[in-house]
Image (cartoon, rainbow, N blue to C red; front, side, top):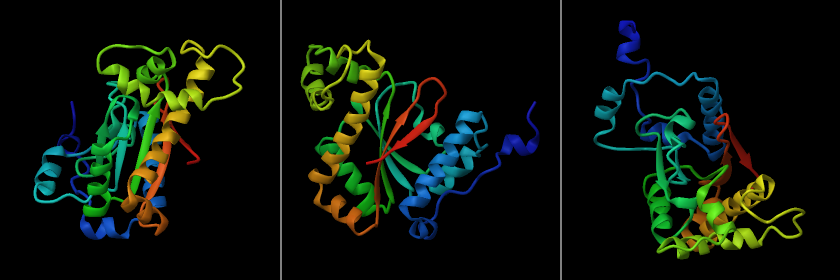
Length: 219
């Protein structure tokens, strides 16, 4: 049975505008790495969500926006040990960037002050597998066409270029994340300028299904 302290939660505060303003992109990445280490170790922070809901009701000042796949096995807030009001999360199969995602990122960063954009791919991604194997079905077909450039961008690969080849699948997964970062920079003048001015960072990472560990990539 939980103690009264555990039942009430150990963390009640949410990020304030003043605290957000002091953050730099590197601070957010460091916090994400620390939070993911706690997630992998099974030591997530105990939070009083009821209190956090009340404190965040009239405003939000998140640290970052994370673009993730829709995969149900990736609980983004838990992966980085974040609470209510900490991060924006956008989810779409294959962690793909489109106009709506770009607009959401501009809102998160230019309007609400988030300091980091993170494109989070993951191992064994069904969308990436579908693109490699050229799956066709309804609206899935044009969606997977957006991943095809990542498949084609892995040249000179030794071994079968099929989704059952784990090494090839991993290479395409990384390439897809990097490709979508390029889409952010080329598709949003505002975000590209904010990155040049060092007001925000744009980062890439891959989530490992086996241990839940996030590996940050050069982007």
